[in-house]
Image (cartoon, rainbow, N blue to C red; front, side, top):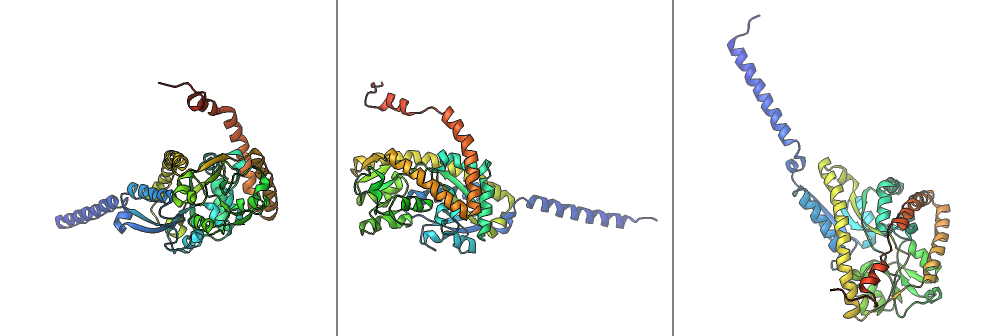
Length: 378
């Protein structure tokens, strides 16, 4: 069979056309989001616009928006813009919101085991260690299992380790556990059960509603989180006594939440950026917290005339005893609660022994440089 010059030229042209189309497809393939246009997400935080926590939410969104080059654009609204703070999980799960920034303990009413991410003593772990358990000790898988158990259509990223939270703001210093008897007190999560066990009359309120409730006499005392948030929200206007150190929220962290349907539709490249941005934002948040909380702690004392007191050890020990009773009861009622507790304890036993044996107590160094008997350094 012979092939004419015309047929050969025609075949070559078809080959070049197909090859050019294939090359164009190859070049375009990596920029899926760009080809479809930027993906926009509307989020809400569980925090008032003026709170530093909402600032953390904006910081996170900016990191993702910048790292994706605008292929994903997250807008974060403050608490109440679309739904109340405690309604975030339902709103994200249903797709009313594409995502949100909050804490897992705010979903306590949906599944009490969710509060084990930070609402309690953490079995001697701090928040950073609890996040280590989450990533490397099985917590991530257990959290996905928990959300599936309540039919929540969400993808969750715990991040941002918080320092130990104060016992709370009171009318006068608390010297013994009996001082909490009958006190109308605000807290959330498993801490509700712990403070109820201490004799308080507990009312769970979102952060933005606490100070007004104290001002109107609906609360006698309350805890929220840290010096910056407490100062910005106006706690010093309704109380001049704050008790530092507590086991009720010794190891809490924030939560980044996506609607699962919306998240699953994202390109793998964007999902990878989200994961890295979450860890980067968590570390940046921890650094910012050290700077800002220490400044506001100082100003609460010098400008707002707040008196800080250490919570007595007797109260701390009572918290641990009551927490153990609460955990035993909930573990008997909720198999997933028990599974998570056992996982946390196994990780904590190993990790905290390493920490206690390895990390030097910095109090001696603090006293050496800044204590009442410290020599002046030049």
